[in-house]
Image (cartoon, rainbow, N blue to C red):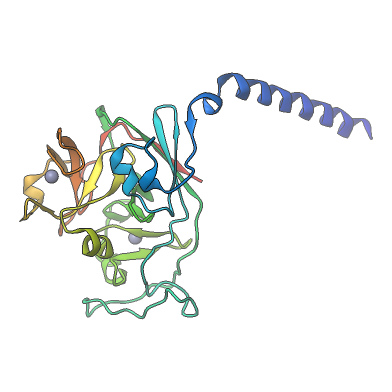
Length: 258
Ligand SMILES: [Zn+2]
Ligand SMILES: [Zn+2]
């Protein structure tokens, strides 16, 4: 009866050696990973727009991907922190129908792998439920649905004073304009990126409020922006459904996981 565990241990060791072997020969981490040593703002290895991420987001480069790690905890007050938390603030927004949901913000461990050079996808793919992108303060973006084919209608009344809320496992997220970000940086500012690496801008451009009619079915268009003076495809957050993204990712999407 004791032979089985021994044999298992030998097999496990063999498997571990195999894994170690393959990772040392195929993993790019030994050759072209750049580790951040200071703040994102001064990390010259990063594309310039990515230097705008707050330091709550850890960014490394792995091959052709930018790898962003976030705890997804907002850097602003919310009615969804525990009341004992110094970041708790009772709802003081403008929605008279505000109705707090039973969930509370919980620290996460989320990793986004986003192509450094975004490219248009030949076949567009729908955005998943859950995180579809990341904002500059490390909070994630969700799409325009509350569930499969369910509009946000009732969820909207649970958005806090920042326009975010947590879902059942405490994942705090924005479906619409993150008010503290536009208050800080302007309504025309870069707010973050979707998983396909294309940037997300606020609801204004050149002092004009962007409407859905000005955007394509994926909720973006190509134009010059402050961060991309040569022009780039980008999404806009607008005030009406579908808010951030329409019929799916314009580009080839990266991945998000733990
Ligand atoms: Zn939601
Ligand atoms: Zn634009």
